[in-house]
Length: 88
Image 1 (cartoon, rainbow, N blue to C red):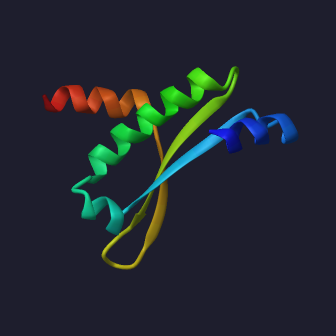
Image 2 (spheres, one colour):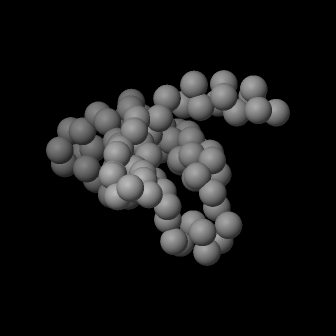
């Protein structure tokens, strides 16, 4: 959080990008799957926005597919949470 605050002050940034990646060996080690990773990202977004006035936060997921193709996806929090509600 200190680095985000410092970057905002020093470089006048107004947007932060939060990334997670999948598969992730460390997440696997702690049984944190891709859905849980995205839930944690959403919580991190809330925390950043609560602590850094006026900041915008975007969420991304970087995926290494089995065919070795790599893609980065923007995650719409609203669509993700709507999708989660439908699964319940």
